[in-house]
Length: 531
Image (cartoon, rainbow, N blue to C red; front, top):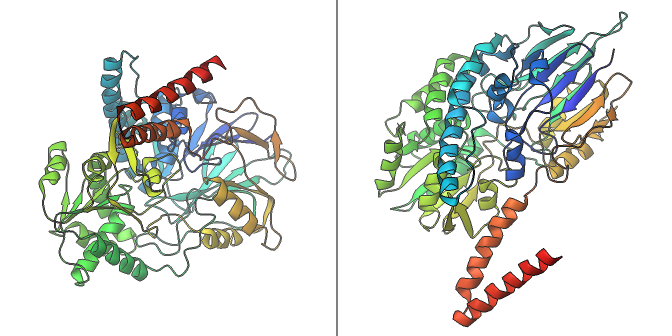
């Protein structure tokens, strides 16, 4: 019996997680995530799936983050009518995150279509709607940790706590073999949590496997001596440095888990007198709904009582409506705003950045990974100007990074996690990482005793898993060159060039000098056209 593994996402990039396990008779999908990052990657969300949705037998979800679950409604809309297996926590979170994703897409497409109409361009449709997302939830089936579940003919799965997010799992899959031979055992890591998580347990998993598909987001990072206490001290120092009488601390944050952890730490620091009492606005309807789910699951969480106490603090204010969000702009004393999205690609954080980036009394604090090509990464890398909602914004605000709230394990933690899974007889695939992280982790894993073969697949790669080791199969033209994944693209370069042209023209001494610059640009464009 043949067994093939397709890498349809999270290959040389950190988003779009989607893997297809295929035999001659059955096809099981692990994750169906949305691409984020550069516009080239995000455009993949609008393309047809590279497989027939109606031909998928089952979908197994590692967790509810949009880069792992965000295209589930599109999959259902395209004809998938099978079961979606996920832990109870993932089912609960998906019930709010997927409709929220549909709502955001509808709102952003409406805004884009208004601009396109003014420009005489064609209108576009959202990938899916809020209603599509709600309908897809009917196919979710909850599974318990640690119990085998038959998910499709010849396939069974067991979910292990990944310590990354409420409900997150590493998924062990056994694929039956013919003739009484041993089944092939695979482990999809999902996202592995770090050692020091406020709310989640340490990650777990089985030993003695044939293949491991391992995330590598922080494969080139060593967060030495990280503790919750040290993280709080560093957060305290960042808040103190940001305190301006009429200023703001903007924290772009994922609405689910990271926002809740930040909230606990801020309230603990205020309670201990390490910080003064500061209004903290959670400006995200999704974060409000997610916090209610975390509250319901508090007894199953580490430090769950601290979270409940923080959520009920009089200094914490959840804003639901657009009017409530806009009213924050009228505050003239120092305050903190935590808003999604974590990479500044959508949501209310973009409106707050537009309002504050040009003011030097503002601070932006990044507390999570910023993928290449995202607005968050561009700001983090020191851009002097950016474009938001079509407007050019000069950046005067302070940019700071405190990357100790990540839900991802670093290189030593990933290596230790894999060591506990050994032996891995036939190979490890490194996914969900950009090139430097992938190559650094690959090099580090080579030091392991009896180190398994370590491969770095590219998007749309296919591997035959039936032999003693994985063999890459010739494939059709990939949807995106491997060199483009996880990198800035021409859209980023174009936006940057427009800003540079504006700077050059503004800096020119007089009208004649400005005309010379414009003429040279036109001549260059004409020369390019003639070539």
